[in-house]
Each structure stands twice: as C-alpha cells, then as structure tokens.
Length: 270
Image (cartoon, rainbow, N blue to C red; front, side, top):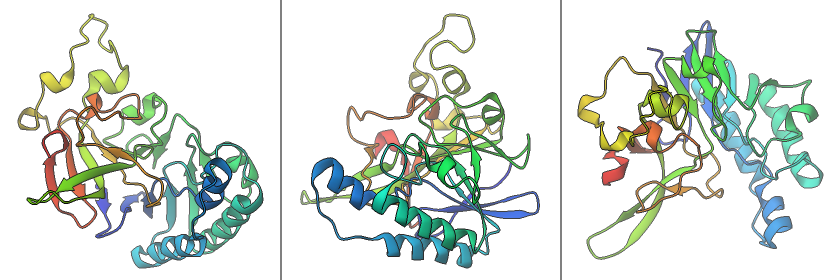
C-alpha cells in the first residue's frame, strides 16, 4: 500500500507517486477574511501572507515536487474576484515557482480552475488518482468519488475539517484540528445505501470494529483543514453532523490523531 505520512505538527502529508514526491493539503480557503467580511460582516486581520509563507515553507521543508490541494483552495463560493483573486494570484505564483500544483476541485472552487488554468493542473469534483490506477486516490469529499478513486489502496480527502473537542478534569475544554484515518467500509463508500444490491443497509458501525478491520481494505485519510479559521466538524460530539455523503459510515473503524501525532483512538469513543 502506498504510504501517506503526515508532516509532524502540520495539517499536511507527503507521499511518493512514481518519481515525484507530493505534498498534500486540504481546505486552504484563501481569501477567507474577505469572504467573512462580505458574507457576515466579520472583520479579521488578514493572514494571506502567513498562509502563503507556510505553504511555501512546507514545500521547501519536504522537498516536494508537487503540491496537491484536496479542494477548497479558495474560500468564497463562486468565481474569485477582488481581494480573494489577488490573494490567489500571489499564492499560485509563489507555489508554482517552487513546485507543480494540482487542485482537486472542491465545492468552493467554482471558477478557480478556469481562472488559473494556465498555471495549475486540475482534477474534477469526482476526484482521481495520482500516479495511475495503483496510485493514491484524491477527492475533495463533497460528492461521491469516481470508481478509479474507490479502487485505490489509499484515498485522501478534505472537506470535513475534522476537529476534536477535548475536556480536562476541571471542566475546561479546547478544540483541536485532527486527522481521521482507517479502513474504508466499502458497502457505504461505493454507494451510500445499497452497494451490494441485496437490500442490506445495515449501519456498518454496528457490525464492524477496529478489531476486525481487514488489512486488505483500502484506507481513507481525512485531512484537517489547512486554514485554522475555516471551522469544522466536531467528530467526537454527540450527534455530530458530517459533511461528506459517505461519512461517518464509510469510516466505521476510524481513529483520530492530533497534528502532533497523538493517537486518540476511535473517534466515536473520544
């Protein structure tokens, strides 16, 4: 199985595909400050330069040949304009000066692929694979993935912005970004209701646990959001509402990890 290794302390991972070393991130949400000001009247300090510096630094640190953004490079839904387009233009220029860039289209990327078609490679909303049929599956996660993605040994996705809410013994709490990863439950991942055609729509969480997860099943890796201001899903909150159509059921045996590598165990039991 192709290895996808998180970068310690960062919402990013690296993998080798063919003769390329790839750095993967999800949910950059460039232009989020302009978007929040436009959408909600919220004023925040602009962190465009910091985001650009962090991404460029990660490319240099990991010696990556290619940066793969697993969707939502941009924040505002719609064609980028104004301050958001200015940030994207500066970001794309800085990134492509260091490595090739691939964008897996997310639900916030309408118009981004067209606007920067001469500078970046684009994989459509259904996702695809890096390195051919035996490579790494990549998808944003807001739609059902293409069959080629489902057939990959490991599938990387964004969209969910997973977070965990941690409490201390005296009642204090904090929220941290987290990774989710584990074997795919294929019956749900493929179809969402009745992939086998036999009428069995049993909740896989009731029939499968980490103890009986087969090593032969593909792995799914849900990336934390690169942008710490973009919110997310509290995966360990009772009644948490997930965003991807195949989660949480498609990850019945999934573990959660903090950015520093701390393994929290089954995200349903944190």
